[in-house]
Amino acid sequence: MKVDYIIKNKVSEQDFERAVYNWLAEGDYTPDDIIENIITQNNLVLLPLHFYMNDYQGTCSASLGYSRTEYYQVWNDTYKRSETRSRMVTNWVPHSQPVQGTVTTVVYAGDKNLEGIALFVENMGWRADELNQIGQNEANYAPVLSLFKVNGSDSWNNKGAKKAYNSAVQQTLPLLPSNLVQNFNLNIRFSEKKFFSLVAPFWLFIYEYQEQQYYVVVDGNDPSRVDGIKPEDKKRKNSVIALRWYGWIGGIVASLFGVYYFSGQTFAELEINWKNIGIFAAGFILTWILIESKVTSIKKKSIKARKEVLKKKFNQ
Image 1 (cartoon, rainbow, N blue to C red):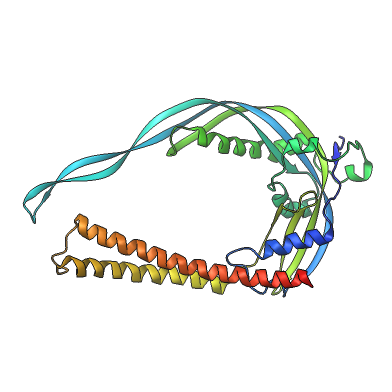
Image 2: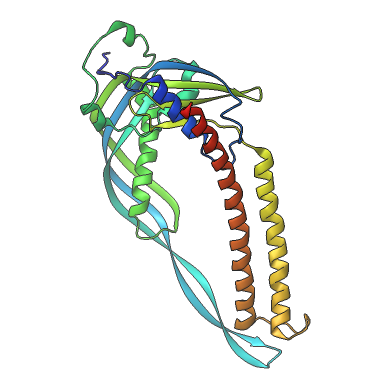
């Protein structure tokens, strides 16, 4: 086995920390005081990775749904007449088509004690074609070679093939002539186009908040690639849930009262007609606007508070 690329770190510790704190300042339910109340530990780690670029070819099959409006007659006992009603009906049709494409896959190949972090690294947006622009070929560099615990073949069989298949599925689904899909099956064969083994630098930001440990990973070649785990402000999240729950209950009751008030009928006389449907729909839409505007206000207020703390931190 050889190492095709050793990617050098291009992100300073200051830029790394700025990327992390910017990431922590985002999020709907991230605690407002997180930037000021965390204990941190920074490490630059080298992670061994296998990159695969594979062409695939085969067929896919599925049942595709096509919706149509069906009209039918019902008898109205109140007005003693027949009325036309409508409903949406979905017809399911068998479908198959040839597929082909190219997918890139990255698989962590190092020590198991970093596998949790590796899950983030594997999905941070690396593309195999980027390797044409970065790094130097330093084959068989022994200290780096020792980081690899799995060779390219085993790595592909254990994880890579499944990840590549899932990527092919995601590429294929939008190509189907309907977005209503059942019993989807993709039968493809992969052919290797490119394969690289490399060592890439990643900044690991370990932090403790309220006696719980979390971490953030930043790509040492591009600080815009950030991922990790954040604590949640459960009080704020529960308040949003309660606001939506009680808001919708109140909104539905108010909409029904609006139908009663503007229809000029008693509750016993109320019937389903376009006027009453319109009144209820208007109340429903107004309820949605009021609730979501309040939820957005709560979230924006929290993010703004974190941004202010962040601004003070880096202006010192």
